[in-house]
Amino acid sequence: MRAGRVLPRAFAVGGVVGVAVLGAGWPYLHGAPALAVVNVLISGGLATAGTALMASSPTRRAGAPLLAAGVAWVATWAMSWNHTLLPLLGIAGNCSFYVLFGVGLLGYPHGRLSGLADRVVVALAGLAFGPLMVVSVLTSRPEWNGYGPDVWWPGWFADLPTFQTISDVYQVINPLLACGFAFGLVRRVRALRGPERAAASLVLGAVAVAGIGVALVAPPIDVDDLDGVMRGIEAQSVVLALLPVALGIAAARRALGVATAADRVLRLADPATIASVRDALRTVLNDPTVELRFWLPDLRCYVDVDGRPADVGGSADLGGSMDIGRAAAAGSTAEAGRAPEPASGARWTREVLTRDGAPLAVVTGDPALGQHRAFTDAALRAGRLALENAQLQVAVRAQLVETHAAHLRVAGASAAQRRRMAHDLGDGMQRRLTDLARVASRAPDADPAETRLLLRHLHEGLLAANQEVRDLSRGLRAADAVPGGPTS
Image (cartoon, rainbow, N blue to C red; front, side):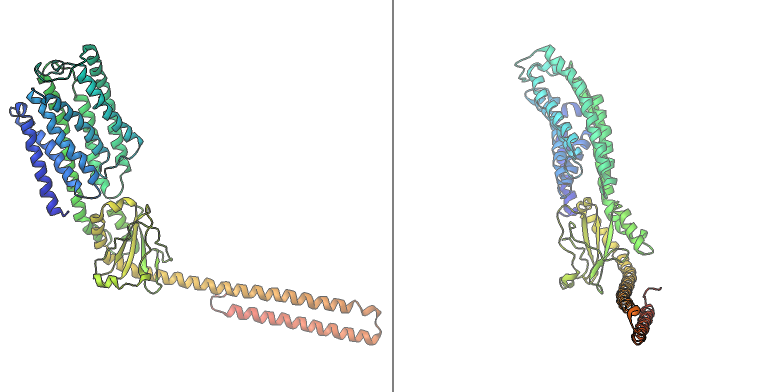
């Protein structure tokens, strides 16, 4: 959904929920306008943020529990009416709020719990604010909880000592859950990667403080009158007001990051060099693992920043090319210019095309970048001209790499030729000298005529061996004369 439609819809939902909390808490809030504003901010802010997050695929799963938490906070204030079933509705709303609040924030911004510790905290919160709270209601009377005696209350197993024990247990459980919640949020901040880290760390840090604060100000469940109950809700409201403010600031920072991504890339990549372009993208995308691969039409392959041939296969998200040029031109690009289809679970990868739709470069990075398409598109769109300049520089490096490779191939061929010549000389000389030795061994038994014949054979053999040495010497000098050949 487009941003122009998302924000009005989100504010509309938040406005409805904000007004609803005034109706739910009217007996108490109409005499406390400042507190009323705070609670409108809490419930309306959560509903607005949740609705906005649900409109974006990366944050959809985190938005639903936050929206539900805003509605649950409205239900919490129903206890202020203090008759019929409304106090029970308020208790159910308050318990649901903290479970939904925990699930939404521990999963923020992508809606997934990050590990076993988070799941344990959520499970314990579910037990504490679910079955244990039900037991506390069943074993108590409404006046023990601060409500009027005429309130409908299923206290079928009312027992004051049991109820007081459960109240004492909550005084221990609440701080422990808050600390576990804060610990989970700190771990979440440290695990965040990519452009979301700057925005989400603010939200999660504020919520960690708010969670501990709520646990410290939460009153025991056994109170004397409704004023005691409402004072506890009032104290929680003041602390929880940090959350919508933090969410609003985070949303503003996220939008500002997208709006300024292009300008930051252009500024950091000036003057455009291979290193400056790569470093600019690493800084703006907040990912030190960003790497570049450039397509060189002359070589029909991708090369790295050093000009060496590089493989871009097995990367994720390559299906989303940065086709900023003409679609028709992109469709006519040769298949050799397209990087291979990615394998799931690999690094985030985007293909950047020129204005004419020809392959320009492939940018890879942390998989977390795949959740921020608008942000990365803005950065890569701004960096396209710098990437084109860098492509020319990489082409020069690639030519040097190719020249060096050719030099090594010629040198290797020359060395192989010399080894073959040395091998041939060794074999030839060994055979020649063996033959001469065999001829010379017959000299003592020969008459003078045969001796002269043997000496002539020895002389001819030595001359032939000498000629072979001369031929080898000329061959070695010829090999040294080849450009790039080895020197002896």
